[in-house]
Image (cartoon, rainbow, N blue to C red; front, side, top):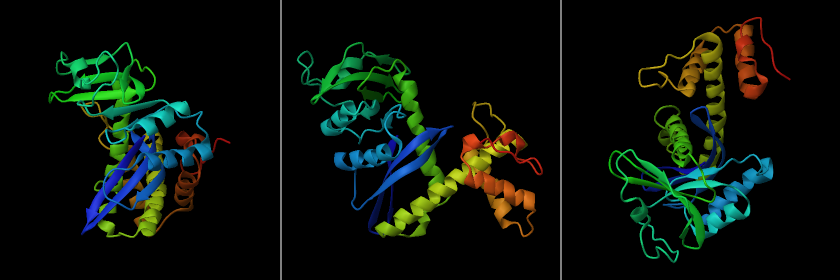
Length: 282
């Protein structure tokens, strides 16, 4: 999923175009581009960011790109299609259709009969600009229409797009609910880039500690609304903070946190990361 992390410090507008992977209710940042400008990213910048990912990991494992309304454009969408990368991107409901049957009509005309809470996936593709796309829509409780465009037909498009909210959770962790990135007062490009790298590493460490504590020490309580009392990130960050602030640390405890820092999640047997019982899957 792609999104912009942005804030303002004094007269400086700080913009970070971020590519992240959905993971257990959160998004893990993998690549980012500090934009030396105000406003949205352009199509060239989005393609460049995704190309960096593909060069390192290949495109076979990409299940799809999720993005909000600013991530539209013929060239960008065509590039994703040419590289067989599925996308599911929100668009403005007043975007005009260009196919011969509905030319000049806004996309909202195709969903005007939806009631609040209802959703629909159109059976036929529609043309937007120079692209033929599948359209899906959900009428929100606020009566706002959420319209999605994709280059392949998703049977559960709205549910899949819901995963995009995980990158918003990530940004909240990097900002007010975690590392307070906005309070760093940094405005220089290269310094922001380095701080973002450090925060990405720290985020992954805290999240893995949260996974371990949830699975091996004390499971998170699920509230009546169906969500846990804390995110895995917050759970791990609190545990990690307590450990780092300790004046006396046991060797087993130190070793445990280093394992959680150094090893990928699939190599760790979380049920056994206890004093005297440290094991790894290799």
